[in-house]
Length: 207
Image (cartoon, rainbow, N blue to C red):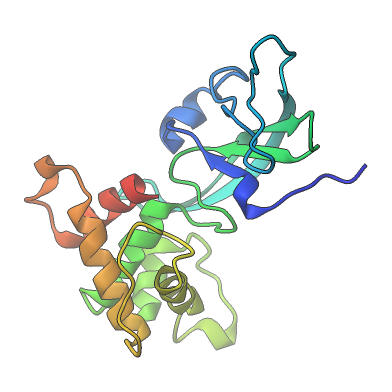
């Protein structure tokens, strides 16, 4: 039987990446309450458990672990579950991990702020966020990921709770708008920090 997968079958837990790395949550701790594919309850009254543990899977996460830190590339083990009714495989990840994105939400928010608000060059942003410093000749003068992330925000594919950029806005302007809104999501105690640091923190919350 082939596994049924989709972006909607990737669920974020309330556990942050750092805590997850220190101790992988147990099967019961992050078991989904319901199947995102068929909406079946995990523990229907009077019936057997419907969403059962399905092992662990390695997942790569890139980007600095703090706004002051150097770019990193870490491997984490995420939990998988299988729905006994529709056979969908559900992956549960830490809070800052985004579907189909190698970079953490915080790293993406940080990069958008550096590029959109501080007007850093794409090359300089890449050096601050990308742990892979050896790149091909075509990537030396830029970083295509920035435009992809700006498009994804404008399309509502990531940070879906943010207001979208106005039609016709440049990628950089869309990045700047997203960074401002992400910075506003940071804890009030961080309001004295530079905007790019607040965007880092706010993105982790808005993921």
